[in-house]
Image (cartoon, rainbow, N blue to C red):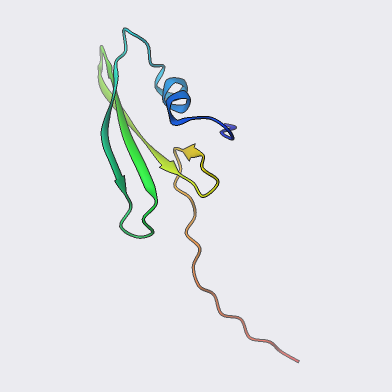
Length: 80
């Protein structure tokens, strides 16, 4: 799904089909312990029961349901 230039509100409405009949609320808004990136957990109330999704903030300021890959230090050897 193309997410560039989409707000968190638009992403929540698309993924959870928010409407007046389907209320949505923020359950959690925190930072990840590993890399301090933000994430938001939202919940929609459905007749079958609640459904929740977690949205992760990426470095390019987009919100996605998949966390951004963590850059890890790497070492390389030069062979001549």
